[in-house]
Image 1: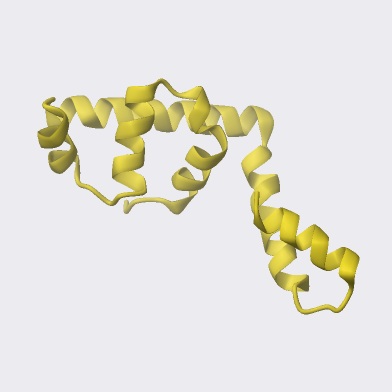
Image 2 (image 1 turned 90 degrees about the horizontal axis):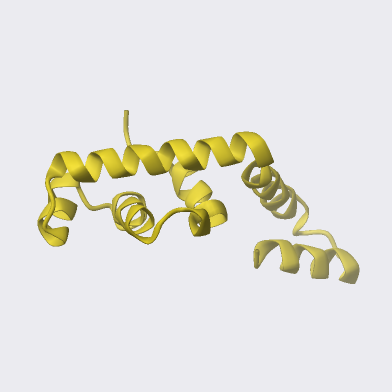
Length: 102
């Protein structure tokens, strides 16, 4: 299974709930597209240690999303904003601007 953009979105929404190390390793993997081996070498830990921390972070992120559902709502709002962005209406434009800046 390839890297998942959904985890990256979850990181954006819930990343503050992870400890600093787990957040950093997960960001390196998903956002910076580093391999487990590259991260391990840079951080001075084993590849397995990196993998374990990332898997724990993924589980935490998925559990938070299951309980709260904020990421799914956020992605839906972004989708709606993209669909209606061509309409001429100052209020709509302001709403979409706010949504796009979330």
